Amino acid sequence: MGESWVALVVAVVGVVGTLGAALLTQSRADRTKRRELAAAAEQQREDRRHAEAVRRAERDEARARERLELRRGCYIALNTAARQYQIAQVNVAHALRAQGDPGGRLAELEERRIAFRTTYAEAQMIVPDVVLSSAREVSHWLNGGYGSLKRLVAAGDDTPTEQDFERFQERVDRGWSLLARMRGVMRRDLAIDDEDEEPTG
Image 1: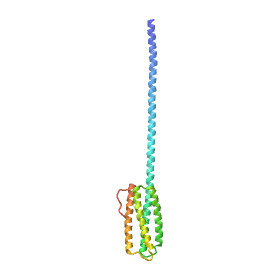
Image 2: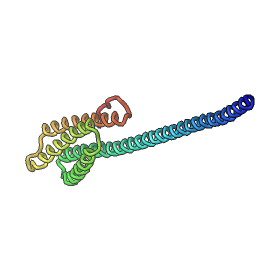
Image 3: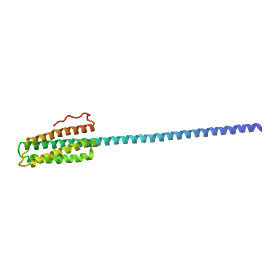
Image 4: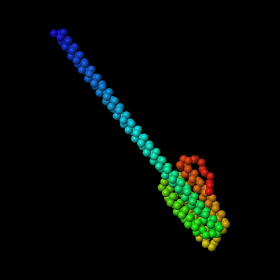
């Protein structure tokens, strides 16, 4: 009977070992599969995070381009309106100096003043402070020139003197310098160049 017990024990141990090995193998396979699934899930999360970061970066870049285009359009309009306002003032001064009727030139000046005021108001909502500071200085200067011209026109029979026109010309020269400075600030903001422009008419 001893040998049959030994054989039975050996058989039981063999069966238990075989079953245990199968269970152990299955357990390891399950653990490996769970790790693979966890790694795949983590990779998917990482891919989603990366895709979202790329979408955010593209959206931010598109917004930055839109803002740049908006500022560029505003700068072009403001520069153009300021130059036309200044030129209209010069035209009125020339008409007064020639002792002609400045009526048509005054109407043009009024149109240019309103156009500049409109573009300046838009710029106040769009442009950064550094550009707005320069535009504010130009606006103040041009409006001061407008006031000077209106006083010369209102003089009526008191014809403006050559000295009045010389003072106004000094104003005009300073106005061109301020316009050139404003244009330089705008160009730097648009990253077009870093050099100050020379004043031009």
